[in-house]
Image 1 (cartoon, one colour):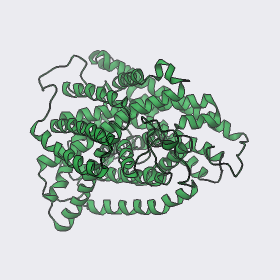
Image 2 (cartoon, helix red, strand yellow):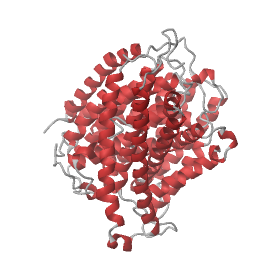
Image 3 (cartoon, helix red, strand yellow):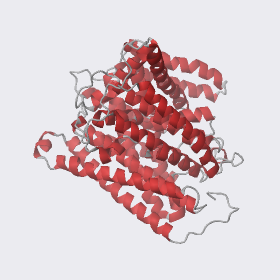
Image 4 (tube, one colour):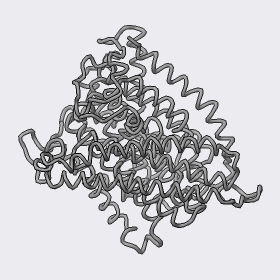
Length: 585
């Protein structure tokens, strides 16, 4: 059997070389210059545009782009097709596509006043192109909100202690935000609040929280089970509330504190793998007991489908992901203190997330027996169970290690959910002229509408459809964000990575649109045409599948139209700015 340490060590080496060599090269290509004033300083407003320390922004960005997806996707793919295809796509997708795209999108947004890729696209191809891109981003973003809210709800159901710990950690983040407003020493706040976050694990173990007991019911239709349904509503309500607060009140401090959970979870797991392998302290052998390849067609999760193209829409965070693009042109560029920070924030975090995805595969691969054909309600807790097995090499009891790893997963999914509602507001504000005077631009109206639509998208509870739909949608946005960067570069200097980004966009769009097409034809339409399913499904579940089908159609139409508009513009002669003009001016 293959040693888990060998795999993680090899991947870490590849990523280290990529960051050192290619990351430095990209910094020169995009001519990062700390003498330029970043949007955080130029447009400071104390709400969205707020300069942040590099370490603090790294924590926010890492937390926001990681979420639960680089854990859930690799686990789902490893159980569906084996760990080898999942590992191969993580490495290739991260190094060849993901990190480069994130770096490019972040830099382009910083050069365009921290605006979205839709705004940048529209600046060069016109208002229609801008509206198309922003509409697609908003649609894909709804899936981010809904799916990761469901992930959190399922984890809270499996580990009630993680629910209590998460509540404690959110309260601590609010207190840390209040602490920062009084300009107390930042290092002292770190010393005081970070240990308290880890202490919340003990509180959770002592006071686990279950909203609806196993025998209970809930007024709204059940998604997976009544407790999950209740938590789904609570999570969406929390995310809405968090999204309308100023970033320094909850988003910044919570993401900073939660980053230490990720560092501890990721770093602790890697340390445990090293110690357990070298010194033999693991209770169980840290080898890849899961099959490296289980077949081209998936039988897990009611059959996600063939490995090509479904692997690429199952693993997106941890490879190449449109959610990253949204954050790279959303909250992060509005907080970047210096241009040179873009290499660490835009490029480095993507590599770190790829390593997290590999560790996630390791957590499920070391479990001696994983239920065959298990649904997501068993696949998600596998991360906590396998993580506890790994952490046992450091002498951490399983009844502590498993809830801690569940807290890590839920904390980052929560982070992405409310960040995404804020990003959705940015999309709408870019679409609507004078958003402050329009109802759609009101953050309370906008946030509540997003929460409701996100709920409808996941109310069917069918993981085999929901997760690849989520992945396909955000990967379409990733491919189109690459096209946006290409359009910008052609207006700046056509020799700057245009070919590599164009090829990357073509591959990502081909795989993602193929996955969405397969999903719509093989899964969603079959349900709507199946009398047996229609007779047993609730009205909300039927409405949810209808919304999913409509979403696939909207995404496909928007994607093809955006590509047509982009290449129609590029095919014409583009007037290049003079060599003295700064990129993005």
